[in-house]
Image 1 (tube, rainbow, N blue to C red):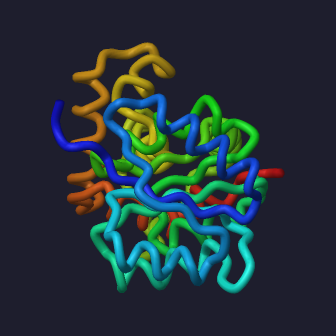
Image 2 (cartoon, rainbow, N blue to C red):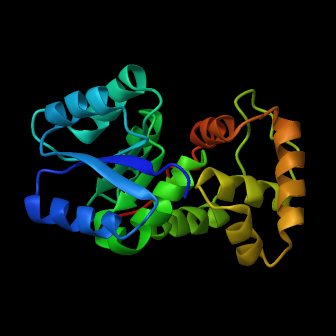
Length: 221
């Protein structure tokens, strides 16, 4: 077995924290190396242990999850941050993504999505809880096409736009192919064409473009 994913957990509810640890301990390739109950103690712990992943509650005493994520982005840039939250409002998601968070998981679905989220962000992806991502995409289908920042609408086909929007929400090529009923190779082709037209080279640039276009602002609680 290869190297295990080293994880720090931070949540101020002891029972929930214990449940998270039990869940992750079931995965042979995961190793929980530390736990914290406040934002400041989590900050110190991550600085000290330099884990691969920090799973943090958005609402903690001393320092909240968004503030913690911002400080870790500079103090421990190799650690990928995954937020656990009760909040489904768009404002929280936008703040989290802008703070450098790689994963956004609702507590109510953590038992079924957390391990998937950790694996997604470990390979460089952005993971948004499916309950939010689904509503986000549905809202985009109803939203008029927006112009780019220079006032000129990018010359994307409808399919290219759909694929890029789904990528921005963290969906994999396989998930996009299934939702659109097309092949995975076609997804990659649409992604490449759209990225070339917009001058986007990385997933991070796609996410920033999505933010600038308001693609992450249509989430309803």
